[in-house]
Amino acid sequence: MLKQLLEFRETDRKWHIPVLAGLSVGIPILAGYFTGALAGGKLASMAGLVILYIHSLSIANRLIILMACSFGIMVSFAVGSLFSFNPLLAPLVLGLYAFTVHLGLYYLKMTRPPGNFFFIMIASVAICMPFKPESIPQHIGFIGIGTMISFALGLIYSLLTLRNQPVDNQSINIAKSKYVNLVESVTFGSMVGLALLIANLLTLENPYWAPTSCAAVMQGMSTRHIWQRSIQRIVGTFIGLGITWLILLLQPSLLVLCLSVIGLQLVVEFLVVRNYGIAVIFITVLTIFLAESGRSLTIDPTSLIIARFFDILIGSTIGALGGWMLYNERLQYKATRQIRRTKILIAGRK
Image: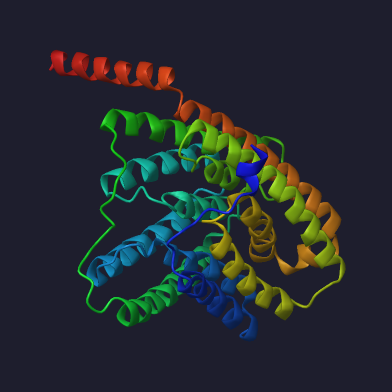
């Protein structure tokens, strides 16, 4: 088990993908810093992660997918923003949205990583922001700017690297029935919603860390993989929070933090396909620098680090439970059989 947690896997991922991701995240946050709109720059940087859906080897398909995912990112933020006014309604809406995204991506043949993760992450961040209707259009505008920057970078990158490659690998999809996909979608949505509900009931300061961690853990390919991911995320988070705490004690400037985000994104994209556990260490530092406000990073870093650990611990534990439900063959069989029976009963009554 320890060997699997520490080993580096081989990958055919090209070295320039991390560079592309670093630019997609770095340009918006630096633009926000130099224009005095750092909060908006951070939102645009999160939206810039849409560049990671750049899988297809056909330029036309790649650009279509990037445009569709960019629209999806904006919809995710809009849905979260519109339902952030009630901490008890928010988990229900987020759960239903996670269910819809997971269900829809299967039919769109977009199940390969990162899959539903960034849509759920953006929705989680938005639904946990203070409800200010007058700010929603501006925030969505920042999200749109981030996706446009990524799309432009994706277009330039594609023109430089995919000149005569008609082959396409985007249509790869995991073979499963629509009933299994429905059960998985219900499980996914309910666990993500439950993570946010528990975080809200515990009145955590930034509860979006819980559903985001839950969604990240449930991206595993099997029960064993999900439990392994859960352990990696908790241990990696603990180490990453320690590193973050040490960095914040040095009171780095905002410009240094912005530049750190770019460097950390490069490291994360290089490591995440090779060793998830080690990547989580840098993911933790990256997400705190990117998601937290400058004020919370400098005033009381110790309280911030403790709070983030419990947020991620709660989310990872619920994600591990959800992963067990996802890949428990007995539960899957009973659920899909019940759905088929219900469908037959409904059809017989018509």
